[in-house]
Every structure is written in structure tokens, then in C-alpha cells.
Amino acid sequence: MTVRISTHRAGRALARTLVCALACASLASPRAHAQDEERAPAPYTAPNNQIRFGNTALFRNLIPPAALEQQSADAYAAIIHEAERNKRLLPNDNALVKRVRDIANHEIPFALKWNDRSKNWKWEINVVRSNEIRMYCLPGGKIVVYSGLIEKLHLNDNEIGMMLGHEIAHALREHARERLGRQQAEQLTAGTMPQLFGFADVGSTPLGIGDQLLAMRYSPADETEADVIGSEIASRAGYDPRAAVTLWNKIDTATRREDNGFVWMHPYGPDRKQDLEKRMSDMMPLYAKAVGKSIDALPNYAGMGRFKKSGR
Ligand SMILES: [Zn+2]
Image 1 (cartoon, rainbow, N blue to C red):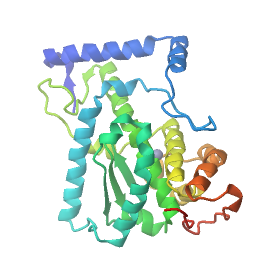
Image 2 (image 1 turned 90 degrees about the vertical axis):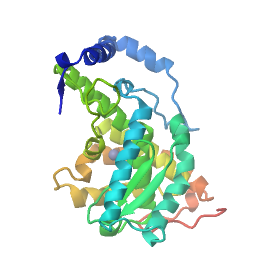
Image 3 (image 1 turned 60 degrees about the vertical axis):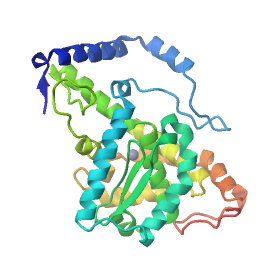
Image 4 (image 1 turned 120 degrees about the horizontal axis):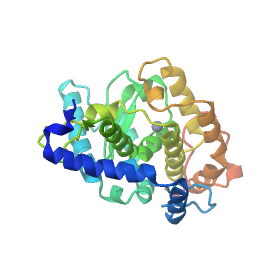
């Protein structure tokens, strides 16, 4: 649903503000962007200086993060409530729930450096019984795993670790916030009042964001960023980064023919696969350190499960 700008004075004021923000963003010269990027420090750089992402997306500034996190929390509560009502929410003592939470809880401490706000997120991890091959982490650290992902693809712990890392990285890097900001900007340039998702009071009913979040299709750049940061987090937590390749091959094979399937939402092609493999030399030292071995002492990976860890 959209609301014509002309029907709301407050809406016009907001629209002018957003259009100005958008215009300023679009009119800045490439040189100015380059200078901004040079000035903006990368939030994190690995010791080998190769794992880094520091550019701030312009569009996400159109969406206040606190409001997005609150709306995500509401959408999450509704999803969990609905699953519970349909007797599809797996209980806390279920083995699969325990397994997924254990892996996520190992990873979360390594995630916090990528987003200052995430230190205050109320992380939640739930598993829904379903044939669907799906997992997501909503803004604010709200994770839903559909059991079909793990059971149908026979994921081992390393693969679950890579999957959780990837989804958590999307949330940490606020890719949904950027997509929604882009959507609002496009609606503005089309001459209509954007769906405000309750981010401003212009007399319109705040609209839920659950559907938008759940149908979101990420860009190849988002995917690469989520791969790199997700693998970094999972490797530091002790999960084998080589599992990212077996994981995405399985997902690709299982969902590539589905409309709006998981691999449609997270585009995966030869370039992305090659990039995953290329980054392995950055990730393996992190993983080896996490499991207390030298890289040479790590066994070959062939999808055979989690390595035995020492010191944990
Ligand atoms: Zn993705």
C-alpha cells in the first residue's frame, strides 16, 4: 500500500527530507565517495590485513536502526507465536534446538565487533519444524531455523556453523536496512509516499515489515560480504570454513529450481563459489587457531563433521 504525498503535509516534509538525503547521496562525485571511503576506517581488519569491509551504505541511513530492530522483534514474536500455535515450534529440550543454539552461542561472541549495536541485541534462536530449506537472522539478532534445512540437506555442525555465520553477518552489516532504505528511496522518486514501516508519524498506519524481510533478495555484493564476515566469525568459533563450499553446493542443488527459494534470496553462482574458495587461505589460520592445531595438522575436509577441539 502507498499513500500519495499530496495527502499529508507532514508526509511532504518528510519526503523533502528523504529526497534531499537521497539527492545529496546521488549527486556526490565519485571522487568525493572515494575520499569518504578512504577517510572511513574499516570497522575491523584481520591481522593479515586481508579480511576487511569498511564502506557505509548510503541508503541504510534512511531507516532508523532502533525502529527497524523493534519492528523485527515484533515480526519475530509473531512468527514464533504462529509456529507455537501450529505445534511446529521445537521445544527447548529438543536435540536439534540444543545443537543449533550451541553453535550459535559459540559464534555470537565473535560477531559483536562487527556492529556496535549488536552488543545490546537480545539474541534469540528458535527452530521451526518444516520441510522448507531456510534460515534467517532478522535485524536485532532474531534467528529462525527451519528444520528442513538441516534434515533434508544432512548438514553437519561445520555447515550449520557456516550457515549461521552467513545469516548473522547479513544482520550485523544491516543489509536488510539498506534494502528497505533503497525501497523507500525508489518509492519517493516514483512520486509516492514510501511505506514507512512506522518509522515516522505521517498519519498513515504503520505497516509490518515481516513480509518484506522474509522475501528479501540480497545483492551479490551483500552475499560476498556475508560470506567473508560469516566465515570469519564461524572460523574463529571453531567451525571449518571449507564447509561453506559444501553447504552452498547442497543449497544450490536443492533450491535452484524453486521460485523465491533460498538460493534465489542468496544468489550463488560460479563467481561466489570461486570467491569462497579464494578466501580459504585467510580463514584456515583462524580455524586452526580456534581448534588449537597447526594448519598442517588439520585433516582433509570432506563433509565428515566437526573437528575435535582442544582447550574448550
Ligand atoms: Zn546471503
